[in-house]
Image 1 (cartoon, rainbow, N blue to C red):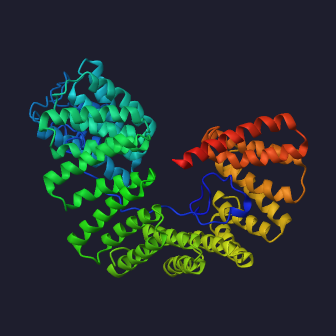
Image 2 (image 1 turned 90 degrees about the vertical axis):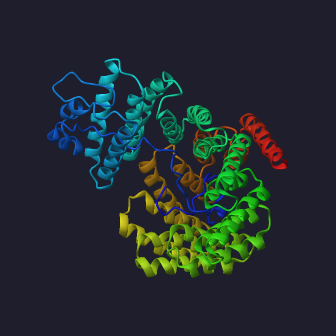
Image 3 (image 1 turned 180 degrees about the horizontal axis):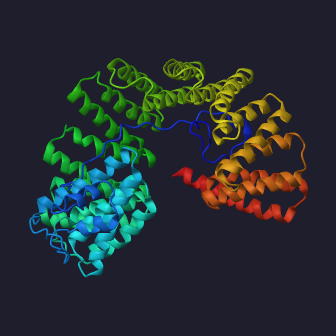
Length: 561
């Protein structure tokens, strides 16, 4: 979807009069990366000390034949005219070589020399493949393949990452658990499989890494924290919440026993566990996690530190999930005040911006629209002050303000704001760019509410055309535009059979994206049944009505639990 998309519904299946609403993202603490245990797999240098010219070429993406001929990993000697790497025979030296390669790839990528980074990775990949074809299949080859995969992940080539992982998986399967580096290689594989959404494989390698580390360091070692948290994240992602909670609790216990009950390192698993509890609808358990984070930060940094404000905001989310909306609002306001006074985070920081929008949404739900609108106006004013009044980033705030006014039935003001936003986007990206469709579709909704149906229809048709070209005719953004168009054309009295075709098209898109039993299809099925009834299609209507009843019962029963 568009860069400035804040109002788009994830399902687009609601009726048009509900279209103008503020969609907000839940805000949690800042993401923290945990360093992998004993990270020996940093990068592999394909340079040979005996050939400076080959070394320099390799470092900057030399011809592959030069790089490959210079590449002699530990324990593997080539029979060409190069000097053997007998001086590189320690684990520490191998670690340094590994680290140098990945650092070089990252440096090249960050400096805009992605092709050089790819060539360097490809040289190492081809060299290690040549070794394996010659019969050398051991931990050295696994470590280099690991780094090559991580390097391709850095440059964004996920397809090649998957290909390298397939080879690497066969190599590690052939290795015994006592090999050096193997636990770290498995950790990286678990993370990469997770990135590729190959979750079962991710869990499998994480389990093996944990088994190896338990044998090596003991079941109470803090080295186990990283793979346990990695596996917990994957388990939570695939819906195995119970197992994920067990992993998070074990990681927390390991941290408490090794670093104390108020150590900042506890924040990471507590955040993850708290967010999982929110996802599972267990607001009380989530509140316990976030309250503990607040206490940790207060004791470490004082009550007025920005980190306290961020943690307090997550606590507010948990309060809200428990139905304690007024207390959540109080915590939200206090959190924003702490962050503002601390000067730790810029006023236009995206996380703080989302916090204001979240609070504005909550205030609207509580019927305190004026208070919510003040926050949305503050977002707009901060953005305009720092980036200028006609900067495209202001459009999302204009759209949100328009949604707020629409909720209060002030459609005239909503139209004014949306036209300003649309003009800004057209000037910035042109009239055919998909990003203009966000304010344009909202404007169509607003005109519909103002009973200007012909103008609304023209805008909806234009949105449909642009999105079909940008995303494809069977995409979710197209489904959203069709849903809007059907509502407009229905009131214009368009032919029911044509409307039915559009509704069936919407249903097909939804079924493809959410499944035939997805909650998102219910509203569309209702509209199709209504349309079939008007057209006298009794048999077809009966089948869909039966399906609709089954879906309603399914989700009604789910709500009970």
